[in-house]
Length: 356
Ligand SMILES: [Zn+2]
Image 1 (cartoon, rainbow, N blue to C red):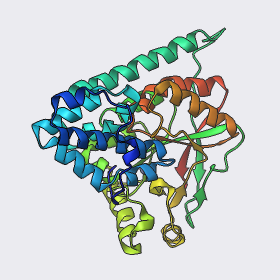
Image 2: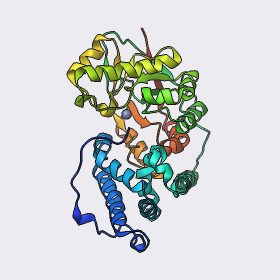
Image 3: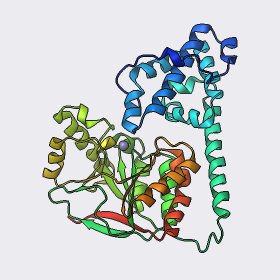
Image 4: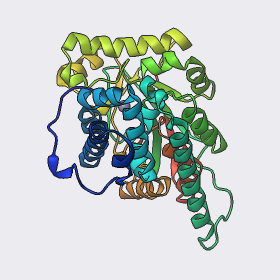
């Protein structure tokens, strides 16, 4: 899902920047060492320069993925990769988390489990720090505030309305989670939502619903909203109209195939739409949801920083639709505190329901 298209030109300026220790050179053959270093630095540079999830996912090109696969294919390459990864600080290492978790080749790295464990430890430490910081706020906690129970906002999907802030009353916010379901993070988020009697809308990927049907059923069991987000998360603008429609339909069919139905709610991957596709959704009486609060949780890997940023973004508007992704560990990790912080601000939780 993360990796696609386009090759990129290498910037030789960054090849020898002191990001990684010189230990690599001592123990791995020179060419693999250089390739690993180039791969890691190019990937990080792409990530840092990406201002949107789309830019990053398209920037992490087939070329970079091929490099990773090549390096994982030899002992020297694996050694060079592991040394590079092990020398990274956790926030940089987190950029590679989905790759380490999902790529079959990554399982060949002897250091894989060690790296994932150290990332979990980072999340854990930062969340503890967040909680300690909140405990130091004078008068906190006054009472255990709850963000819910959520008000139901009934929307007619006739004619396929399009929502950005949902037209909600002052102080009302709807939570949305994209790109799941994820076998660990989605249940963690469901638990936090339950604690707060809060309902959200999950815009799930057909392929992830098929991979984790039990988690999909759990979302529905808790009465959250369930919308489509395509089958495999392409940028629909780059597809032919027919292929884009097939992606949309397949995504809904995957959900319906598992739980029997889906809300007639849709979100474009990356928010990337065409007027023709928007017209198609209108004709199908499917409501489209964008967002007006972007938490950038694909980019902000540190839970403490994500908590602060997300709350700051909420504070900038007086109502709206909040965008998260239930595939990221930092998102799941901050959810209990984030919901509590929304409640402390006396904001009202809202969930969208299809009226017809
Ligand atoms: Zn998405």
